[in-house]
Structures are given as structure tokens and as C-alpha cells.
Amino acid sequence: MRAEARIVAAGDGRGGTRLAVLRGESPLLLRRTGRPADGWATVHLVGGAAGPLRGDELRLDIEVGPGARLEMRSVAASLALPGRPAPPSRLTITATVAGGGVLHWLPEPLIAADGCDHIAVTRVDVGEGGRLLWRDDLVCGRHEEPSGSVRQDTMIRYGGFTLYRHELAVGPGAPGWDGAAVLGGRAVGTLVAVGVGLPAGPAGPDAAVMPLAGPGMLATAVGADIRTVAGALDPLCEQPTLAPAV
Image (tube, rainbow, N blue to C red):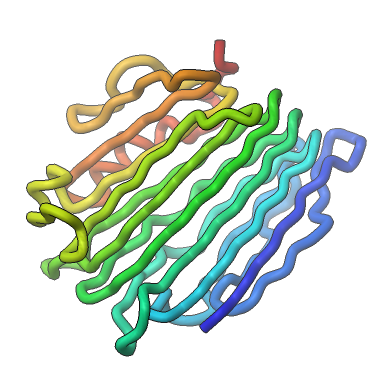
């Protein structure tokens, strides 16, 4: 399956946000949800089909213009499945945030089902004066099953310079993979904040918050299950805890 989705959020000149483009194909269906509040637009990603399955090629493009504030969520966890013999499934996400724009990417976790082979590529460009929260959670296998293979390749740039670059590989296809011994648990989550600050210090016994070499911070957590990760990172995603980065 091949599918693409695109969203363009623009400031309306009155402190609000309008969705100039909101277009998707199954399984990448986009739905505006809730009522606009405080200038924000909220969009949920709805899975219109099972997967991603082996062989799927999916792409999501996000553009946030000056003065626009966009929050992206998903209605449920994404489940990477094995499917028929085929190349790895792939999801490519590209996002741009202009100066004065704000993007919060806060989806539900990705679950790597046994036998899956999935690649997630993320490229985010934030202009000077833009702000970003980018959350990625991964669960290695469903209940009492081994993890499938997932490779996450994430790069976030600010003002034309690379601020954060990270690659994570789990499952049988990962070099040196030995189950939970590699991660210290079955779940891992990261939260990158650009242009905003996060509370200093650890977010829990298996979590850490650290500054990046630029106007940003990184929080990461591991746990035996996603509840531990959520317990550490969810409070950091609440807007009242955010403060402008120094």
C-alpha cells in the first residue's frame, strides 16, 4: 500500500490557526478535532487500515506557518505488523515549523509486533523563533511476545543547524539485539523540546532530562511497559509545565 497525507497550518492574522490543507489517504486519515482554543488547531491521525504492513510506503508532510499553532495526536497506538513477504514497511514524516509557529507532535505509541520489519524516518526543520514538542514512544512487542524489527531515524534542525540526531534499532534485525537487555525494558520514549524549556533534573528513576546544544532539551525514558514511560514523559507534555528556553 502507498499512501500520503499532508497538513498545512497557517496563522489567520487574528491570533488563531486555520488549516489551509488537510488531506490524507487510508491509513493516514486526518481529522480536525475539538474546538479551536487559544489559537490552537488540533488534528488527530486516524488509522483507516491495519498496519503498517511489510511493503507499505507511507508519507506524512506537515507545514506550520508563522503564527500558527498545531497539535497533532493519534486516536490509537500504531501497530507495525509482519504481513506478506516484502521489503520493510516505511513511514516518512517531514515537518517544517516557521518562525513564530508552534508544533506539538504527541501521538500514541508505535508497537512492534513479532515478525514486523518497519522503518520510521523523521525530518523536522524549525525556523528561528519556532517552537516544537516532538514525542516518540516505542513498545517492543505485544503482551508476552518478542519484538519485531523497527528502525527509527530522527533528525531535528533549528535555524539551519542540526539540533538532534538519533537512530534506534530494535528487534531481530538490530545488531547485538538481546531483547529487553538492550533497552532496560520493553518500552522507550523520547521527547524533544525546541524553543521551550523542560523542568530540570530526572523525570523518574529510569528517565533523564538534558539540554541540547542549542535552544532545546531532550527527555528520554525506558520501562518494563509503556505505563512507566508515560508516567515519566506525560507530565512534561502538559503546557503549564513549559517555559521559554533560555
